[in-house]
Each structure stands twice: as C-alpha cells, then as structure tokens.
Length: 169
Image 1 (tube, rainbow, N blue to C red):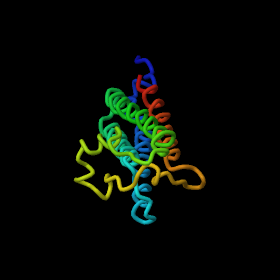
Image 2 (cartoon, helix red, strand yellow; image 1 turned 45 degrees about the vertical axis):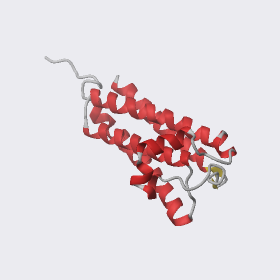
Image 3 (tube, helix red, strand yellow; image 1 turned 120 degrees about the vertical axis):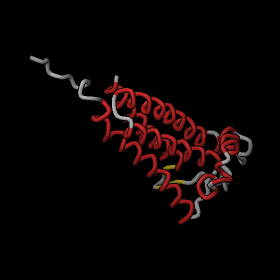
Image 4 (tube, rainbow, N blue to C red; image 1 turned 180 degrees about the vertical axis):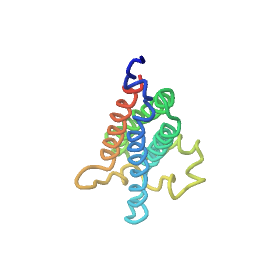
C-alpha cells in the first residue's frame, strides 16, 4: 500500500502554472499599456519609465520560463529571479515618483546608464528610448501618477511570486 502523495509531491510546477501565467500576462500587459499611452496618447517616457518597461519584460520572461520549466526547481529558479526583478521594479517606480520626477533632468542617472548600456534604446527605440525628462513624464491616470500604477503592478507581481515560492519550497 502506498502513502497518499502530498501537495508538494504532485509537482509545484503544475500547481503554479496559472500563477506564472498571471504574472506573465500582467507584466507584458503593463508594457502594452505603456506603449499605447506613448504612441496613441503622446505620453513620452523618461529613462525611469523605460527602465521599468525593461524590468516588466524581464519579469514576464522569467514567468514564461516558470511555465515551461515545470517542477519545483523551475518554479524556484524562475520565481526567485522574477521576485528580485519585481523588488527592483518597486524601487525604480518609487525612485521615479519621489526623486526623479522632481528633477529637471534624468540624464546620467542609473536608469539612463542602464538603458544606454543595454543598447535597447538604439535597437528598439519605439519601446525603450527615453523621450522626455522625468519631470515631463510625471503624469497621472485617474488621479494616480503613472509611477505609482507601475509600483502597484510590481507589488502584485511580488506578492504572487512570493506565493509561488512558498508553494515550491
């Protein structure tokens, strides 16, 4: 007679699939929303905006990795990297809102240097080129600054990723 299998023995990867799918959809959805805001409504991004786009794309990529690499190891690896990126995203969004948005120039800030070093601003300028100063990019949607919407999306990702990691332990 065999003992009943525990929840963890069934494979955390399979039970985490909808959660990784949610994180991927949210991450890529935020980038799509930012691109619509930019190209349809002329809300040009600053360096901190495009850095957050890059972080959302990276979170989405790790979430897709978690979907593909099933099992506890895949959930832990993909979840851990995505969680670290979500924490970095929270920091970037808060920095943009509380510090960068109050300065006239974002040139040579960490965000500007990261984006320049990545060359993504040259390879995909319609997505990753900063076209506004941080002060100019400080706009609101429904009375809430874009940077705070971004922070909220990063927090949601982080909470879901913590759940994934807890279930994969």
